[in-house]
Image (cartoon, rainbow over all chains, first blue to last red):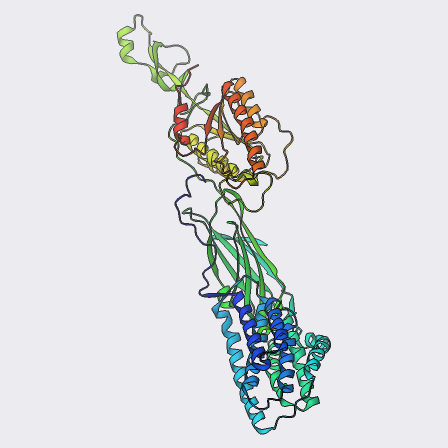
Length: 182
Length: 442
């Protein structure tokens, strides 16, 4: 092979799959969604640091429980903060929490340095939009009719502890629910 | 599992994937259950509303649970490298309707690993081309895949697809002039001989003797010279003869231009190696000698390729090309090797990197027994830029020994030819032409 292959263009062994995005972009989106929801619900506070760390954990270790814990934490903080009604924090948390799980489920499956064909994201995006639109409509309808309850001090800690306890309990129920059909 | 089909060899695997719950969805289901419980306990609908999309994800997953009985079939076909741009591959996945997407990890012969995720429609046919920088047995393609199903709620463990290998034939350089052995043998062939016989140059005119053919009678000379009734004169000629060439390939080692890898490979070798050059030299010489009508045989020192006895013709060339392509090191040090038996009067071409004494000793032995011996030096042009100081020092010592070895061979009558010529020096074809000299007639 001394002279015969010199001067020829080296072919690419990567198959032609059209436009792609790096899998790391999905991890970045996870962090942005979690950090954005945290800032919207918690504002600039000490708990925001916890939320940012959980968002970072969700992006770095998508197979871990960090996204779920973050959602429960922000939900409890939202209710405990006494901001009732169909307001921007609820709207943002509803959208971001759903996005965290939707993108996290993809990141948990993808190789870290993979190139993701754009068409792969089409179905998850459609499911997200359909579910999100329905959830926002339901939230508006429910919260416009019901008066929000008062805030309870210290309930943010309840959210953290309760989330960890419930994860262990639901670990039994979820596999039974989602096992492959025979 | 592999099978051969008309038009191409296909490598195939059919595996039942092992589905498992996506941990992200599992934890999301737990969080949704907790939020629903909090909504009941605190009578705050916000908890239930936040849990609503998470329940929807779980519901989608339940509705689209994959079936365990479904099988994933992967088929890969390789196309021949007809234009020296690479070996084409055509990989097809046969997936069930439960699969939403497929992640593939593709390792190719050029040392590249590609990771990508595609839709099932795209996975039905994936086409690419792999640049092959080496000859001989090559693993062109190896892949692993994982499927995503149940609307993202489940995925499979990575499974191995088929590994596709190909015996890449070495290229052949054109060689115009070829050195011949000390003596040519036989009574038929492509070269002139000093032996009386048929087919060669004119020798003389002599009286008819028993054994001469009637059609050799020269009537004009008979009419001029015959003195007695019954005197007949015949034209006598020399016969033609064969040259026998034995290619001895030293495939015990394979070293590249990067000397930092000589003590052990740290991954695929991307530059031309000594064995690539050896195969190229052997294939070029075999092709040239057989085209000239000579007989060519082959021996290898590692024992991985079978020996080929001298022969000629197109089929013999194909047999040689295939055998040369299979020459490869065994991966273990070859401690003792017998000197291969070569026919008498054969031109022996020893193709080696001459990094140790074995091939050189054999070459000197053959030269001392009357064979004409060519030593084709297949060590590639070396790059020491990436080597450490210790490696450069070791390399210099090795090269001093090698130079001494080559000088010893030259002094014993072995004729060296450097195959991977440095820029500005004579290419192998020119050097071989310089070795072409008039044959000795016996």
